[in-house]
Length: 165
Length: 226
Image (spheres, chains in turn yellow, red):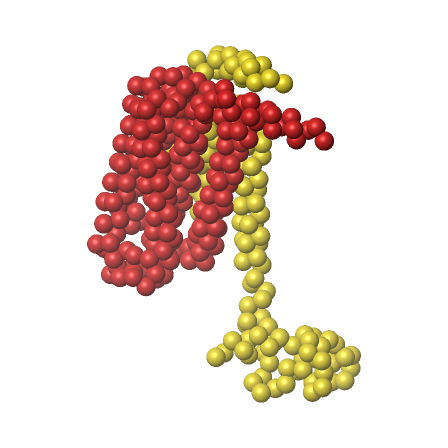
């Protein structure tokens, strides 16, 4: 492969783009106008209360995502670019979504783990029977196991007691 | 065994009649351009994750203190936020036009579009300056510096911690973009761009659009959401 043929290939590729290039300014102007209209819609929508507050958030973020997609596809040329660049940016957003999703489900599901919902270990009480290996389970006071019926295995959670300093 | 010898011969050969724009480790301009572009997109991906962390934190804290965030966002001026959004969208358009002009070898037009983009960036920062000084004056500051009087809803400092962190980091990106655009003006004046060599201005354009894209999310989240 000589260099001259490679350069010719290159100019051929550019000739194919020439048609796209000619119409590009009109396209860009059109995208700008759409973006400005969408911005006005977002501001107008913020003055209206749609049901819950979450509906307003959803509307605002949906419009923002449409705008961001337009910018990425046309201003950042992703539509006519190599697919690898789209893969990179979509993956970035996918991982951000993963981060967002797991964080929010974590926080939303913490209610059951509030200190008030945990069994209180009395100060001074041994968190595990003497001689037991760390991490072994002991019957919590007041459980059926304490009366000698079934040796129920409730984990002793020392965390709330430790938090009081 | 003959392969390395050929490679050396080829390398030596291309050194003679080589275009100064094409680096030795690339076979074609196209390959060189694509490699630069992938690098830029990877950088933009890290930028999204950088701001993404702040967005996730903002969302979590808004869930924790919804009343404080609602009360605090009333201190922001929607109109100024809207003005800045329009200015930044306009600058994105002029930037893409500058890239297009560089690609079609219209040097004067490239220069004009770059200068308009630069002006838009300056207007954005000027508006931001007025907004910031108003908040400094009112004591609407992040964390323990918050000393606004007459609040009925507590914990509003949390909102302003995020407000200053997010808009501040975004502002630094605008400054960086302005520096890059000035550099592009110098390159345009020197006639560095042609139909085949416009990598630098194309990548600066990508960066500028990302800064715009982040503001597209910042504006509704900070100024509009109730």
